[in-house]
Image (cartoon, rainbow, N blue to C red; front, side, top):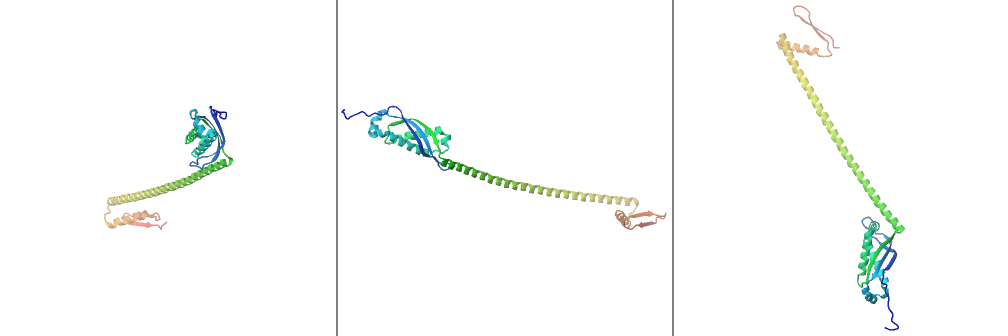
Length: 256
């Protein structure tokens, strides 16, 4: 002890530090590049009482500036791993991450002989040019999505048009096949009807010739010829028996 010696006092209670407008850079993420903005943070810390002697030997009264410097360094390095949107959507998780990064940075050699207590993330200040850039990026993303949807719409319409055309072609094919089958059935029916009618005429004629006693080929041919003439629409033919001697006389009129 001597007249030129004095006690050096260190703060025993919590140290409070306020950092304002701290420049940080976020992680770009999948949608955009990283953005630069500013943070306000507040934190408190305590000096480790049992290490005050070592703190005095290593840093003396400069420990406050060293702690602040390492804190800023830890916040900036950790901020680059966080997407910009998480600063608003996951604020509590972000605070916990930054606090952990600060304590880890303090524990690096040479240690600061201090322990972080409370950490609060305050205001997030986005510069106007950064906000405009972020807005432009979002608009571009939405524009790209819109164009993608329009392309998908055109593709769907083309595919639908092809399907409609295929269905129409199939419909026309079925209609033609149905009409062809119907025509064939009609023609076959007409042919069968004519065959049946001719068979009936032949059988009726044979029965008639047999009933009237016409047995020769000559008379049969003559009868068939007269019957054919009678069935013609453009010919008016009448046959009459004029005397008792069965003399057959015919009178024919000119074609109508």
